[in-house]
Length: 497
Image (cartoon, rainbow, N blue to C red; front, side, top):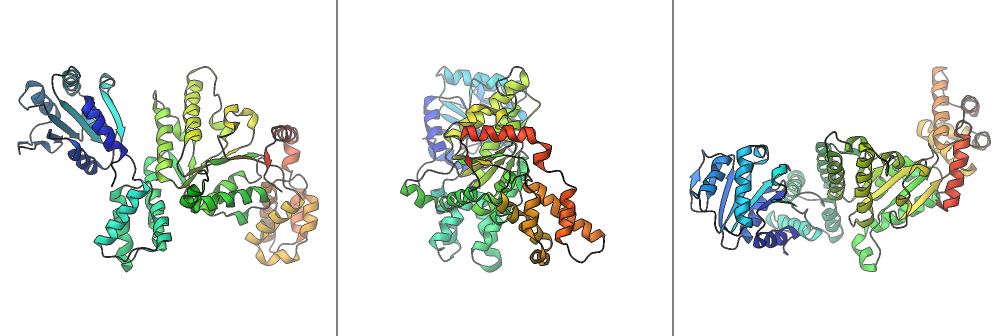
């Protein structure tokens, strides 16, 4: 197997004399094994909360981190031609003695007095300001698809399982993307524990594992997938476009070989209550991938630099979990204040810059579905070509679309009553109504019929609910007219045919 990017980087940095390399990883054993493969004859020293160890079998279980570093500073332990691997140290990096010893050793390394490298392995990143110049932060790469495939092959061979069918094998490898080797092996072991086989039904185990990762991180939210494209009335052009992207998503390797670009995402703008959020949920179900929701409220932190770190972490998490759909609702509110003055506006501007750069350059299978009501409040940079694959505009539903929306919501609640209801009459009474307005009308009529003891709903029941409902076009007439004009001027693609 080819060396990973991290392995190559570690070799270069160690040879160049970088004093402290901080590897951010949950797979500390794997990282240490990688380091042991590349030390090139150097003596390996290690410290953890269990004590100090070296390759000459010297063990000092009673030594704390400060004792170990002091022994290196004073020469009690030979530092030259050595590598020190540190674990469990993030809670000690506020200790003045520890920081002082690390600074002293770093100076000696930089001055060429000793051939020595300090490697910190930790799932938690803690960087004392005093060590910022001496420390280099590295992240252990997630397994590539070839590495995941090899892990599956190795597991199947070890367990004497019949090789998987190629199509399912590729689907399984793609679904396992973003999980560590330890997690992959655990899932495969769990999959064979009940029937001795790995089947398509076991893909749900992967979904649950990814859900755990999201919940523990606390930055993104995983949304349950209930709605499908069949729950959306109209918007046929948008739905057709999503189906095309789904085909690429599910056959990515063949698509890339053919020259097709990896799908980036879509911006859906338009009237409130017309199905923008519903499309985000339906897209994830169509692609058969997790739906992650980015909430800016969870991103914003109270400490300097915390918000930017949270944004980077959210992006890294989405890329790790990918293939997935990343849903950003009300995008114009997420980056409100960009380019303004003041601390809050500066933070938002930096967050926007981070997001924009990622959106432009990303090559992962994190498909972004961003929704917005009012694009006049959005930074113009977001609307430039290349940020999203397409921008769709959703207007108020046309006659045939309203008919479909009525049918969907009546069938969902009272499937036996649909045939007796005059949908054409309801359509004629609801010009200017949004999809949310129509759903509300149906919901109210069903509730009213139930409370009056009726055994079904009728056209008259729904008519009565319509008379008691003020449509979106009545409530927001001026705003909607203004938005419609802007969308037409920008020549956004209409989501309806």
